[in-house]
Amino acid sequence: MTAISARQRPAPAGPAAASLAFAWRSLLKIRHVPEQLGDVIGIPVLFTLLFTYLFGGALAGSTHGYLQFLLPGTLTLAVVFVTVYSGVTLNADLATGAFDRFRSLPVWRPAPILGALIGDLGRYLLAGGLVIGLGLAMGYRPAGGAAGVIAATALVLLFASALSWAWITLGLVLRSPSAVMSIGFVILFPVTFMSNIFVDPATMPGWLRGVSDVNPVSHLVTATRTLMAGTATAPPVLWAVASAGVLTAVFAPLAVLLYQRK
Amino acid sequence: MKTRTTGIIGDLAVETDGLVKTFGATRAVDGVSLAVPRGCVYGVLGPNGAGKTTTIRILATLLRPDGGSARVLGRDVVREAAAVRRLISLTGQFASVDADLTAEENLVLLARLLGHSRIRARQRAGELLDAFGLTAAARQQASRLSGGMRRKLDLAASIIVTPDLLFLDEPTTGLDPRSRSALWETVRGIVADGTTVLLTTQYLDEADKLADRIAVIDHGRVIAAGTRGELKASTGSAGIRIRLLDPAQRDRARDLIASGQAVTVHDEPDPAIISARIQAQRRPAAAGELAAHALTRLAGAGIGVSDFALGQPSLDEVFLALTGSQAASASTEQAQPALAGTEAVL
Image (tube, each protein chain N blue to C red):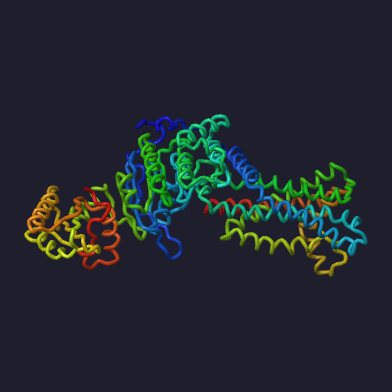
């Protein structure tokens, strides 16, 4: 046994190294349990196909015409929906013995959460990439070119990671992964549908248009749409960045606090 | 034991004073005071729900106590939690490895977190997999390993950097006998390297075989503590257990054994078995004399004996006496079970 004793104690990993180690863990999990990507793949594909072919003709006269309007919206919608799983997986993770061990290690305490979030960015990127790829195959042509698409995707990812903190907070408060999932979607459905993702709010009744106009998702979609079309102006982009900032400022400290107390 | 620069403060690995943790109306830990010397295996024994896991979670800085104080290796678990975490390692009640990752990835991840370089982390994982006989399973997901192998991996993960204090929360729950004794052997090896082990268990034989000192916990309180010998001496007394060839002779046998001896004779559920225990604390040789007396008398009366055991009470009896006497304080003399059948030491 003496052979396996290791009295030399290296200095534990710092906050960044520890977070990256946990991000590596998230990626390994995707590799070993690829089926957990089911939702990440299913949601974007379903949304893009269903909304284009179901509503396209009715809403815009042709599916092709509607797709040009819709695709930046489904990109946002798909990635935003996938963020709920950050809270769901964290909640499931917290119940495992492995997490107890992580918490008893001499590393920066929020590292497991931050690491998981970094790993989740990979899933968001995959979801976004699927929508864009599928859209291109279906005939979507972004006038903003590759630069516009990359900028739009980056903005969506920024917002998604900010929103993730809200679900992580929920994941720390609620008892089961399914509770996180149901509450997450109960919030997300109205928030995403009462926006300009599917239709121009001009046709909505006044009160609903009011809701849509202040909805941060609408600003994000406008920013995404204009970036991809190459017609972006500063205000919607700034609004989207600001709402990501507010979400992070509120929920990141709250999540870390709740996690420390757990 | 090798000395080290970090933390030789006092000679106690764990010192708690009146530790309290409540969950709503439940006092899960209700004034636990422990003193665990360095370098030993300390067993915390108790039934399910006694507060063992909660106590460990407080000591491993995962839970804040609601009252009392706890010091681990001289550091306060609340105020100096970060320092405590550098010296301890925790193996939780259910395997504390990531079920989705492979055995090797689990070890590499922890080695990286503990500060090893990428190369050194792989080396260390390899060393440990080798030492624990897990090399063939290195690339298997932990969820596919057998219970025993998973527990081995768990222990390997706990000593990537040899801790000063290792918490093992019910390490052998759900393991088959062979895996259990293999695990005990590993734990003994870790202790021989100078690590103090605090172990919780609900298995008496585990505490008996592994722990140098034992605290018995029930309803969040320590109801007895000491070495195995002290615990046994405090509640049990030596005795004999005899199986008769003919159950019909039990009444006569009972009278013969009891006559002229300060013993309590007890009929066991098996109609052929009779047991006797010495009533008061007496000389160590008393049990032997009792046995000689009993066998001579039985032989003289022509009563055949098919099986015979002589020994100290098992920890089972001690435990039942301690936890049972709280519930039913009446007639403790009779409530104390006789020598446990198959466990009795010859």
